[in-house]
Image: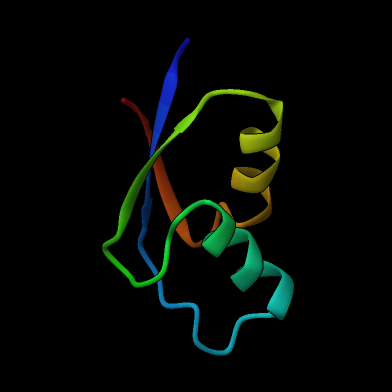
Amino acid sequence: MAQLKITLKKSLIGRPKDQIATAQSLGLRKPGNTAVQPDNIQTRGKVAKISHLIEVSEA
């Protein structure tokens, strides 16, 4: 199964609570943190919700 490498590029300070919760569910806490997640529909939906805060690449 394919994997996505997701890096938090911008701070979560001042963001809506749902965006903070989405980032934390992906395993991202601080800017610069990187998480590897499976490439599936659920992960793609989370990525789409906070796409302006993260950078995504194939792992």
